[in-house]
Amino acid sequence: MKKLYTLIIVLALSASSCQKNVLDKVPLDIISDATVWNDPILIDAYLTQVYSQLSILTNETKGNDWNTGESWYTPFEINQVSDEAKANRVADAYNYKFGNLRIDGGLLEWWELSYKSIRELNIFLERMPASPIDEDLKKKRIAEARFLRAFNYFAMVKRYGGVPLITVAQKLDDDNATLYPKRNKEEEIYDFVLSEMDAVANDLPEKVADNDYGRPSKYAALALKCRAALYAGSIAQFSTVQLDGVVGIAAAKATEYYQAAYDAATLIMNGSGHALYKADADKVTNFRNIFLVKRNPEVIWAKAHNLSDKDAGGNGWAYDFFQTPVPNAWGGGNADGVYLEMAEEFEHTDGSSGKLDRNAIQQGLWTTTDLWKDKDPRFFATLYTMNTPWKGGLIDWHMGILKPDGTIQTDGSYNGRLAMGTQDGTTGFGVMKYLDEAKDNTQNIRGTSQTDYIIFRYGEVLLNYAEAAFELGKTNDALNAVNQIRERGGIKLLTSIDRAKIHHERKVELAFEGQRYWDVRRWRTAVADLSVNGSGLRYVLEPTSNKYKLMVIEKIDGTVRVPAFFQRNYYLPITLGRTSNNPNLVENPGYQ
Image (spheres, rainbow, N blue to C red):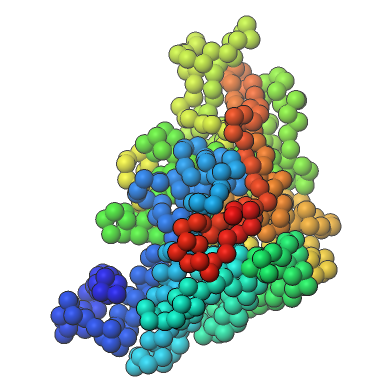
């Protein structure tokens, strides 16, 4: 606790020089528990340090801050273990994607740090009722702490199923049942998250003040309820109950959860003031700016960032450094090698399928304009590929020169044209979403991206609403919500709706936002969807016409090891270490 209070002092001092009064009166080495709970500045600093350790607020990372450390690419594994992309650098996902998630765990872990945060929040909630600070502020901060605690439990339940539900700070002299708790049922954890959001939503502000940006609002609480209820509904509908309910939810509960998701989304849609971002006439620019324009009306809750390098005490992150086209970023960009199959998910603007005729495109020569003609504008806003405009030029990913005799030259130059483009590429695609072209990524300075990371946005709420509505039999509501997304995107509206169309729209609209992996798990389609060896696209330049011979690279994940998702992987393992430390924890099915 002493270490915690030391950190609180540092955070309080860094917030504002005018916040030193209490510290001027109390020696820094003997600041007491009572002092913290009597001062609103130190109370806010206490919560701030909880936020600072919640790496799950940034795209489901495994304790890595997108900045420094040995596992630089770890934050992207949520994309790379899905069917969106492969890992272009050695990372955890490179191993786990190939069926190697076993009892020792290691993938997307959120346990020890989660329970550390939960304990600190439980202490906060026990101390705050007696605090003499302003009652309105007290009520708001208590609601915020309960929100964060529920957010932690949601992050755990979607990983592990039922986990021990601890709502009081444990003490060393507690009995063994308290110190070594059993796992609650999965249903109980979801019910806790939903009930907590019901309890705190109206105690959170309808709109967060500018100086509180990054804290949750009433509508962030409803968005968490909406997402969690949708997940619970899917688990109930598609899963099997095992271990007496520790994992899985009874099918009879599905309608109740879908209704909760539908109702929470309705409240956001009808009264929040949030809306789809539509500020730019150009559809590509508009979709890109959802993720670049700070505090736009689509953003319900975000993790805020600024330009200051985290190594220097700032609040930047390293997204641009790792996702930007290479070699612009010290050889470290293009972390996600987007599959050709993901690129094909984007339809044409007339609503026709985006799937390429792979035999046809490998005949003759193509311009990239013809290849991607009339593609969904979200394709260009989400991905980059050959000839994508970038920093005043075009991305050049050609790999080889097609000579008149039909041979391909891959080194040196031919008639003054380099055989290889200036960019490196593996699958032929990278992630454009969130990239800021104004960033200078040529220096070895990683943590200076200032784009905020969006945790909840209105577009997701519409898709959650559509899915819940469809499963409740409200097909007109589902169709209308999906068509709002498609109209903003710039493609033809649907005339009918079904489950497959809703799932498809989520895959396209929410691509590379940390959603896809969890979606296919909760739908119980991951065994099929994530056991596929993806493809890539190679561009070979014909220098006279400036067109390209296209080559589809099948099985781009390799042939020795191929992606494999097993039935047991619908839940992460509790791990042998944790079950050894607490014999009351039962391991998840398939890992024993």
